[in-house]
Amino acid sequence: MKEVLKTTKKEFVSFVVMAILSGIMIGIGGSASLLATATLGSSGKLIGAFLFTLGIFAIVTFEMRLFTGMVADIPEMKLKNIWKLPVCFLANIIGVGIVALLVYNTAIGATLVEQSKNIANAKLNGDWILTGLCSSILCGGLITLSVWSIHHTPHKGLDASIGVMFPILVFAFCGFDHSVANVFYFYLSGAFINSTWQVVCYELICILGNVIGGIVLPLAHMFKEHSKKRD
Image (cartoon, rainbow, N blue to C red):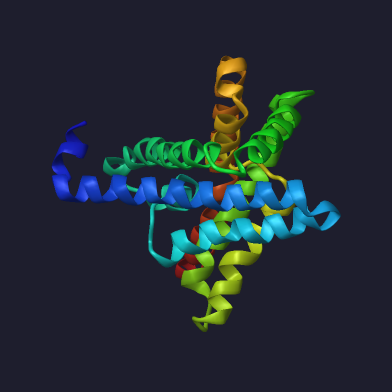
């Protein structure tokens, strides 16, 4: 708490606002993805995955704050900044909650609710602990690959845009678990009300998986740089 207080009020408010906006972008991208999957037949899943990339593209372009994107900073994050991770996640789920509330009351609301129920049921049935962990690890790795692309692509512009969007397209098409996007689906499906503790446990598993997957590339990069210095 002391470290949070050392952050100026303006910095803290700005951080929270950008994190809420990030959640809103995920919710909008998720809405488009759900609608495409529900209405476009066999090609809907691929088109939906492409539409979902809008959210991450906006987040990276405008430097918003997304929990799964910040995970990549954990290996080099100072202890005094760790508070940003839970605050970011909470702000993210406020953002997706806002979008869920808005789209629920639109003409496409019923369609999105039905599709969200299908997704929530698929996630929470069967061996959901192992499935959620493995799926979220893969998602975390792809998210880090995406957010790092903007900094490591030799030529900015189109190359960087493709680098950001392509890993997201892959994870969305495969249906890997993104802890923030999951909350959007759980909000719409009503799973938080019907299966509260299972949803909470599933989310904790997915957060852990996103963190594990998200720090692999940064740790490998740190090891690589450390090896160069020793040589």
